[in-house]
Image 1 (cartoon, one colour):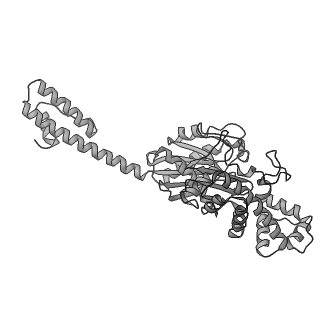
Image 2 (cartoon, helix red, strand yellow; image 1 turned 30 degrees about the vertical axis):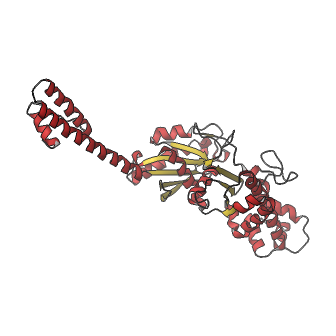
Image 3 (cartoon, rainbow, N blue to C red; image 1 turned 60 degrees about the vertical axis):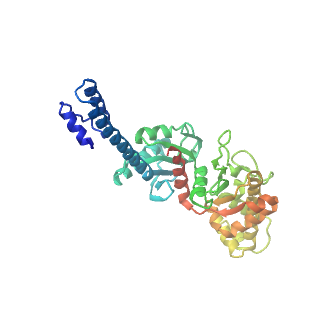
Length: 394
């Protein structure tokens, strides 16, 4: 008696047919039936011992096969990353190594107090899974970055006014109930920080700060490999570092926040204010005095072209950014401070000026070990960072 088939034939001699539907369960049931026949004296001890040995061998081999199958499935499982914005919702399907395999986006429907947003997310994912012939078993989890105040434990969002979410939104509860895939969310600037650290300029460093310069100024802080949230979830609000105590009023209620001078709108406001006391020749000043609309892009392009007034504005912006970065550097000493967002499109022209001011305001150990870098992932930082959140479910 050498195989499972031989044992099956032995049992059939006594009218015993076993088929539970799973091989491991079949072997367990055959062992029970075999023991009953032995106790009844129907089969001799030598036959029982031989048949039991075969069953034990088959059971271990089948157990090994199932484990290998589970490991193979686990290795190939994917992540879903969602970057929720006020105008578009970006999606990505990624490997657990961070490779983006599929990308798509839909418009953000903020009507009816944003009540369509989560159902639209669910429908979009369901449609894509059907299109790609995938199921919930193919995924480790879903991560999402969102504006607003996030409760990362409960998976809720409140105060995301650009989404028209004025009341508490139980996002995690709704998405997990519909898709049956583990879900986690965090603040959008935090997930962008995670993205740059995982696959971008941070190069997996355990200590990194991320600053995004757009319509506002946001950020995320990673220390010893962990994203910092703070007592009230407000860690990383880099835009509200005070850089000029007598400066512009900020929407947060303070004066002189970095956001008031380094965001896209802040750069323009700074240019308009400084133009009032500038008396030299400048195309940028002429545009301002002429009542023309200007943007931060126009300011930086004029500076790169050699406009003396525009250069003065950019140097002032770089001073404020370098000062804010120095506070981060002196406090946390990250390997990198990565700068992204629309304003960072000014590139090396802006970065080198920020670095110069940063070096002026930091002490030697920080100056020698912390670098100012430009973000590398662009619009993909959000979905990549969001997907990385779901690795906790691996």
